[in-house]
Image (tube, rainbow, N blue to C red; front, top):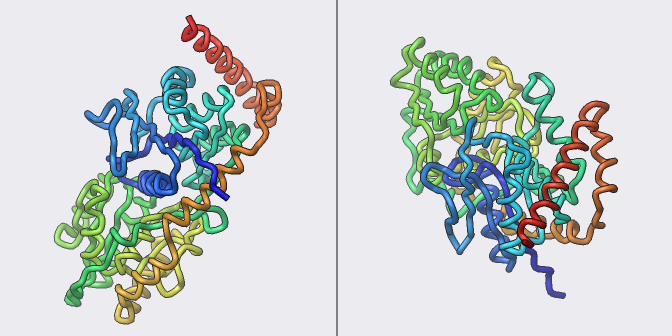
Length: 401
């Protein structure tokens, strides 16, 4: 039986040329869905001079709407101002499913709200986990509750739902053996609190003190970069800690294959696609035991630690002892069998089928779902949806005139 073909709009503030796991996920998933015969369009904000419509590999159409990021590549919340643009793209591209990515994306939440108001099927993929340790996470969980109250399907990138994957053809080990004169530990991450940048500030000096042959390469940028630079100056580690800044995705492999160990210090993590790329390049991984990270790689490819400096240092020591038994080529072949974007696309295709088959709800059916979001939040969410519905009616009248 022929598969149902979908017309999908991927929406997120995070897409190329920005670097990150969400960006890679959207790109590779879109490419595989195109190969399966579906139509895929991406909507994101403007990046530098990238504004308007652009085409990337295999004709993937990308709308860079003229919104500028104001914080960590995230656009300023507008609630209703994005509605005319979202509506135009959905109608022009004859979209059947709107797929939003990442809870931190303002554009994602607003597009899903507008799509539901217009009666379209929506799917949301959550790429991160948030606790309740700070005000930002508490508010983000409430926003996430608002979005999840009225969607057709949800995906989390864990092994029990639809996992991330890695392009093993792009991330291959170096054909030459690395020098044993020094051990290079690679870190490629956004330098923010959630990714454990503060933890690195304590771990790196101790590792350098215990292991004179260890050198660090750090790729990435963010508000915590200054702390790492101050640490390097304080402990006089300029010759042992190399700061690369932001690394374009096309250059990630060249950075990875220059190292022996990949270090991930995330405090929260839904999956961590970076460790897949590192393992595919033949690097032994040291990572914090958070989220579903313990389930991502086999035990002989990863050393886990609690997100505490002393335990991270212990894990690095264990990884150094394991290095003589690591064969990068064998590790790459194993990753090739474990993870495939084609498999991820087929699983996501099933989710779209379920979304399209789900019952269509009207405004009166949707409002009670928002009321369950909290005593005060529910009463606040309902007027937002009502105003959004009235705006949709106004747009239909204006375009009909």
